[in-house]
Structure formats: structure tokens, C-alpha cells
Image 1: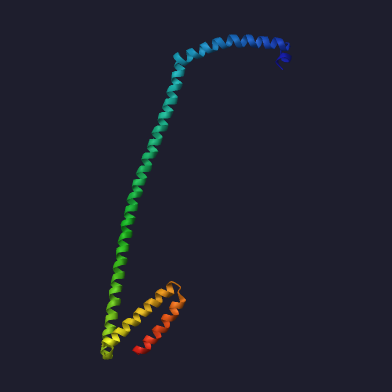
Image 2: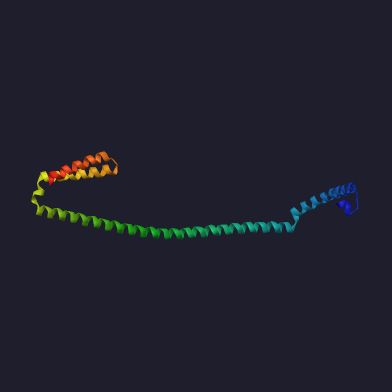
Length: 167
């Protein structure tokens, strides 16, 4: 393409290119070497690059510090939330304990009324039979929970026999 544009033969173009490259290469390398070592422009470029790197480091440090501050703020918020949650849990436990105490008082009162109404229920043989009945019912609940239906069926029969014995 160059040979047609300048009306040179291909061999002439190659020869001229070789001469230009040989002489230009020597002077270019010398100029580039001088520029890298003594040039104020090169120093300014290096300074600009270094300052950009330093700015990037400062921005990163500022971002990290902001993130730490935010996490510290979140940590304070989380601490407040945990304290509030613990307070609510304590209040719930207190309500549950009070409900359990009320249930036990009602149960005791009902047992006392039952004992006053039917004094024969306080006989040791009746108390033993009731205790055995309660144990059988608890065993049946456990068997049902474990899906042991044969045992549960047998316990149901035993419970019925025990209830007939009491009542």
C-alpha cells in the first residue's frame, strides 16, 4: 500500500523502513532513557500517580473507619435490642411463674374441697389407687407419644380397671 502511495517498489520501501528504524531506534532509546531519569514531566507524572494511590488509600481508610463506626452504632442498637428482648423474656417468665402458682393454688383448693365433700377419698388405700391411676395415665401418654399402640391399648385397659376399683 505504501509503495503504491509513494510510487516506490516494495524493496525500496523495506530498505527505507530499515534505515529509519535503525536510526530512530538508537536515538529513541537514548531519549527515552534520559526522559525516564531526568525529565521533570516524568517526575510530575510519577507524583500524580503516587498522589492518586495515596488518595485511594485515604478514601479506603475513611470508608473502613465509617464502616467501623456504623458497626459500632449497630452494635449499640443491637445491645439495646438485646436488653429490651431480655426484659420482655423476664416479664414473660414472671407471668408464666405466676400462672403456674395460680394453677397450683386452684388445684390444692379443689383437692381440699373434694376432701371435705368426700372424706373417704383421704383413706390411704384410695390415695394409693389414685396415685397408681395417675401413673398409668402418664405411662399411656408416653406410649402414645412413642407410637407404641399395643402398650397403649393394654394401659387403657389397666386404667379402666383401676378407675372401676376407685369409683
